[in-house]
Image (cartoon, rainbow, N blue to C red; front, side, top):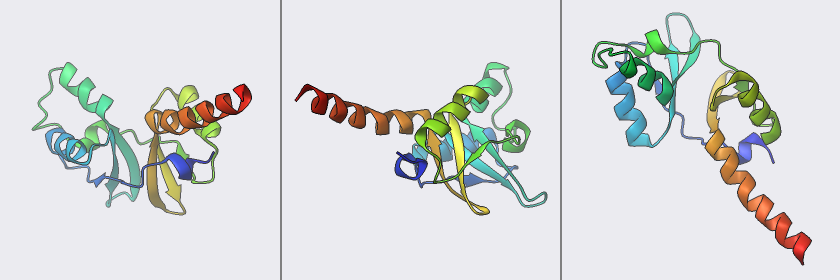
Length: 134
């Protein structure tokens, strides 16, 4: 199975000046656990995850003052739609993260999460088990 089959094509893109509260509201409204942070001044692409927001709150930081740019991970591992889910899972396990930005050329095409991979693998494993039992 490929990343394109499991990824969410809903890509929430925010700017580095969004506050963490704004980012959290947008993520909650879209029901996503990560946002792509696009900095037009540096042409840089990063990711802000629910974990980044949680860590900031845990440190007692004010979500109305803290910005996405301050908490964005900029050393991002990117996947392509043609990666296998095994490749994506290996990258996540090796890097210790739960989301991969999927790039199609120079554009973000989606995000794949651990949850997306599990959702894709579970039916395939059930089907394989049924076939083996029958």
